Image 1 (cartoon, rainbow, N blue to C red):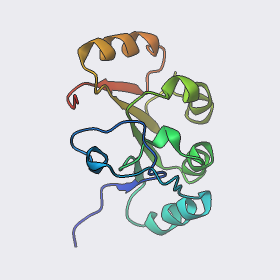
Image 2 (cartoon, rainbow, N blue to C red):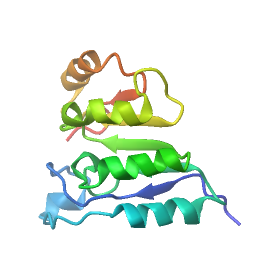
Image 3 (tube, rainbow, N blue to C red):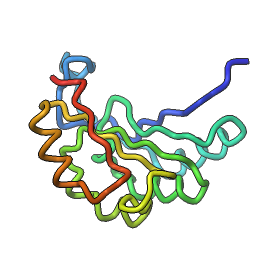
Image 4 (cartoon, rainbow, N blue to C red):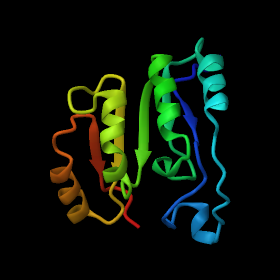
Length: 145
């Protein structure tokens, strides 16, 4: 049996970008679909025997998810390690609430927010400076659009 290292959930299919490597680049429409907290909770329960690592990513921008905070609270409740992979465009709107849930300023144990800086090194430098107090926020510019 192949071990499961992590489970990736897509909490929304909404996105504010059209990156070259994504189906959105080919006019994939935003349909305003969102994973409910009930479905996320079932994922956490059903995957418990296999992994405690959840990655929030996919074909949607997680920070646009209707139930972002509720799902993050569930991840905390079920003691999951959470990696939120984001384009970062809405991070400033959510950083305070995500910090309350995961204590992002003081630790990188239960949650990491990985920001893909698709606009390049300048964006990475600006955002790294803006969010420098959050130890659990990382920045990557390897996937430029």
